[in-house]
Length: 189
Image 1 (cartoon, helix red, strand yellow):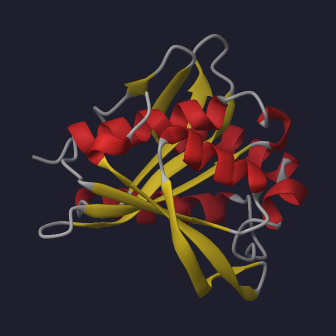
Image 2 (cartoon, rainbow, N blue to C red; image 1 turned 90 degrees about the horizontal axis):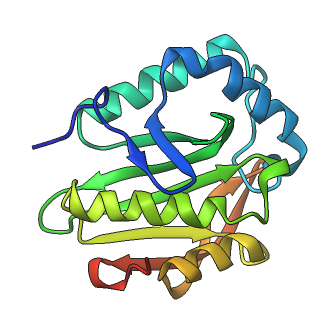
């Protein structure tokens, strides 16, 4: 049975991962806009209203519908100690039998890089995906030059599987991505 969005919380020693809620808008917008220069080089082209209330409302509506349909699980994560928003991790394109697979996505605020938060959040989300959602495989793609992202995936237990040509639009251009996969018994804790 699909866990309810409202009742889902994942915790680690330092982090709390919770589905995005209306009350997260100001923290989310502030972090995204403060980190824009850092994030834009790794993400699809930002909309003209990126970080605005309408942008947030569109995302929140899509994320909520995706959760209800069992196809998308977007979490924002904060420090347990201060409650400060650090970033986001997500499972999208969740597929059921026979693949039981999803795509992993994530971002972290520029000032929080290099502190191990993303590895901790990705590990927690993957554990939840395998144990609670019943997934058997998680896939992730990253730009070949994104060394930090590749290190996160490898430290969590993802294995490099190959190069996908023109895999995603990043900054307005189709870009090749290194594809990684993680199966249930490969998760490093």
